[in-house]
Image (cartoon, rainbow, N blue to C red; front, side):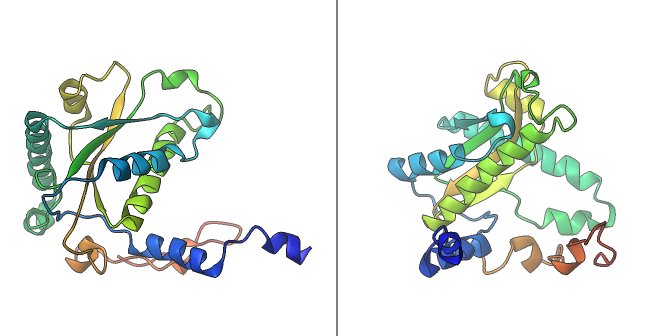
Length: 223
């Protein structure tokens, strides 16, 4: 029985690589102005497409932004939302404005990820949890992110934008919903810890504080 069970286990070096890439993945904001190899990009998108999806609905759609004019327009939209966000930050406004929140102008590849139109026809696993389309697309982004880190490339997920503005800019059909601008590219170095942690914006919560036994965790970390 043990032999059969262990036969499904990867080798120790393979396991080490999996856990290493998870631990070393970072939300990158600083990029080198260099192109991403076309074959590597194809592998990353294929990794994303292997993601699990509820009811096998595969709700993700990827748009490569190749037009310099569109890239500038997306940057302008993100900057406008950054300023709008700052206005509701209260006492943290100044600290927020010091943060670098995107690398749109510098990254080698710019991708927009959106939920496809027509998602309402997929009810398998979504009758009580319609947001599972979003969860599925997030899994696709994480697949791409981990594969990119293994390939030595950085990824930054930008979520500061008005979805309606991206729908118009990228000629999306009615019902489509953009969820991410992904900056992808070469980096001079990876952050040794999450940038927002290094900047003092927040600390990682302890794992034990987030795990409950037979009920809600009883000792969440204090803010």
